Image 1 (cartoon, one colour):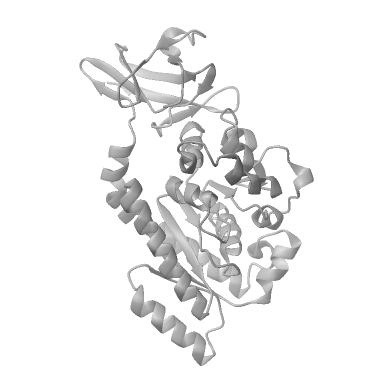
Image 2: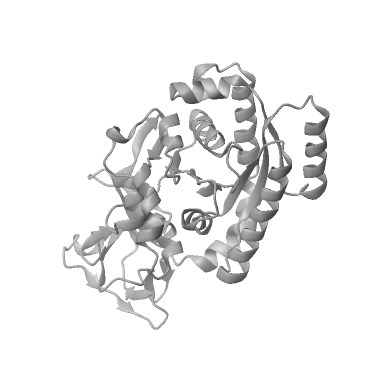
Length: 357
């Protein structure tokens, strides 16, 4: 699973256009995609054909309500595509969390607790380096930085790269940047000079795909549908197919690069001759228990103990075979946020799976 934010502190550079059309294109070619609207303007929600009257749960709840997870809040935006919508209430998150510890980790922690049967999660950010944007950057492994052909965009790219450096130094969190030329009419001399400067300064981070300027993109957004559905033979639809393929082609290399980082970051069940060690990262929880097929899904579960580093841990002697399980965190039944192996359950969610051989 790849988590990709779309961010740039400059407005009007194509973040939402890229987020919605890329999400739709990835879904059309068979990927399971979640799009999170993380902008109080709710433009990604509107671009998917939804209005605030169409939903009661939103990204706002992912930030402020610990028992609301992605699977509770998403809307069906198309085959293989889920959307967590946003409305104006999201603008109040920063003030509400002003005095809360680890407020910049709220979205990341929610995604860890949620059941995420997706190939891609795309997070559309507001046009500012705000608490909402920091949450998205700390939740993702990659960021697409759309830039339009203007001198201000070059400055915005520099600012975004400075932000990524701060996250690396202060939080130890590396995010891979992808710079995307968006809304480019490549005929004027000035635009070609901007392209040359981007290639010279950011060659290693610059995507090959260029999203060309076309009115079809605005027509699709106004109709609340992706451009590939409005006109699948248009230049814009072709560009977004190229972008999707370019990202997919990077998957093998990214898996190798990210392996050590994510292995160190996440703590899934460890199987050994001594049994299975389960670890859970719920630092604010009062009690954490584990239940599953190995104890007939007991509502009481088996207790985990809290270590000095804030992690919860237990060791179980399990028989050979497959075992489904969930954590019971302060009474809420949650899948293991550190275990990507899941199986569907009868309630429409997913149980975590561990195999003892």
